[in-house]
Length: 180
Image 1 (cartoon, rainbow, N blue to C red):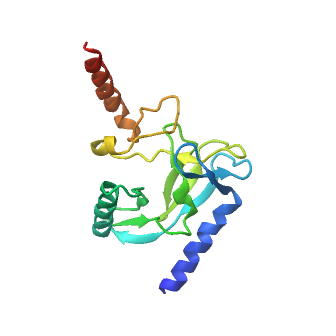
Image 2: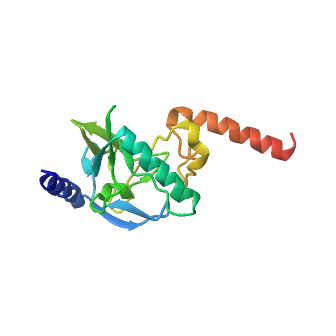
Image 3: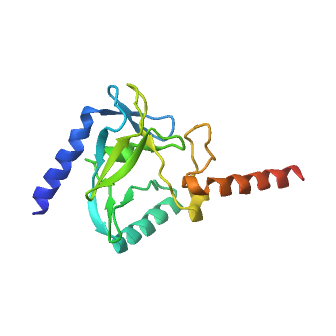
């Protein structure tokens, strides 16, 4: 049963490769780029991986934070699926894990019948990097610096509804540094 599911996941992951290719990213390490024009509304690629419980997701997050504290790679690949399960996309056949964050995204993730699809928000030009808003929680915003360069980037990866708070905190810190 598990072998059949793994084959289906790998096939689903490969299906998105018609739209995208890997490449070096100025945002962070590697990224995914459009092979050709991707029309708005297209299901570009499925975010696949191991389906895990919320408890297992917390255990893996603790291990990720320990790796990060030790100066090792600490990228987040766990995607919320529903109230009981998440998807750990840290598997080699999940090309969608290479999509970087942007505060001005051209894609968005959507849960369609229990599967996470990366959808084009607008037409994406050939060779344009794909990105979506990771929407991390406000409580840990300082842990996730942002390098997207979007015009409204706040400098940290935090959900759009909380960016105003980060801007206010950073403005206060700048005022205190200037002595005013």
